[in-house]
View 1: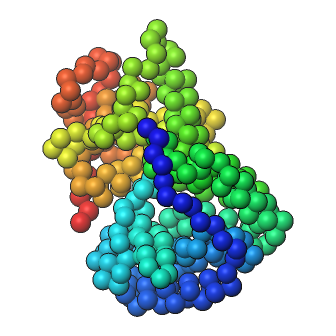
View 2: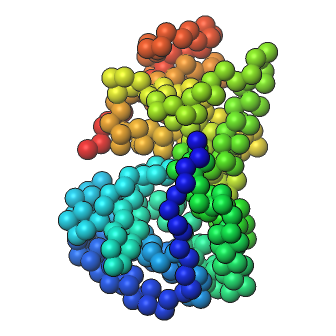
View 3: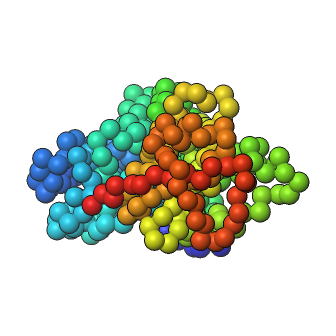
Amino acid sequence: MTKETRKIEVVPYDPQWPDQFESEAEFIREALGDNCTAIYHVGSTSIPGLAGKPKIDIIAATKSPEDTIQKLEHIGFKYGGEYNIPMHYGFSKRGEREVNLHVYKEGNPKIELNLTFRDYLRSHPEVRDEYGLLKLELLKKKTSFEKNASMFTGYNLGKNTFIASVLRRAGFNCLRFVICTHFDEWKAAKDLRNRYFFNKTDHPDPYTWTFNHKDHLHFVLYKGVDIIGYAHIQLWPEARAAIRIIVIEKTYRQQGYAKQFLKWIETYLQSKGYKSIHTQAHPDSVGFYKHLEYADMPFNDPDGYEGDPRDTPMGKLLSVEH
């Protein structure tokens, strides 16, 4: 479904933006105290000479992001949730000065991604100017003001290829995972599902309906700007979750990426209050799951689907974070 969005305003660079950041940063530091370990000015307003939306983007690195919500709301920020980035705490403040605040636990790779992009454009004015021209071109397109089966406008999604090219040139190579949102992510997810699972059968993927279902989560794993993994998680009643698919591209296997991917998914589920995670492990995967402390555990699929009799029902209890 396509939805129209309000006008997107892009204005020339304002030299007051850094001072506005410093003012907001001081309020945030005071509100969060020792929980805030670093604070950064990011986004277009942090890059001298670049036109952008007149909204100050700020990242706060913290020891405990979940403990920031009430304190930030107390100083005028509205909590908006994670969007498509697990373990992301998004806030906004509107009024005379508009601010987007992104709170992460210290060490989150999304922090380095934003700083890498910012610093590259700061030190490469020709690339900065190219980015500015791209924004102006996007504003000429009707699709830039629409949300087509996405939480983001065509304007935001249209910048993705350029941002990825900058990150690649800058040498960004961190591992990170997101909930599928951009059409490139959905394309990669479908490709990985088909190549490693459904192309081996005589039938097309019968579960594409899960792409738009509230009880199904679809993640992709990035290494730098390349998608190297995919996971499909089903959310069950009684605070249980099931691994329907988890796969890493063959060329990236045996390097610990699947282990890190699954650990991040477990942490994410914990943060949402899930108490256990379950799987039907293929014989080749039993050792992998045992290494991550999964044990024999009834699968008990509430939908009644029967798995491959060769698979081993396994699971793991999650310690719920508060």
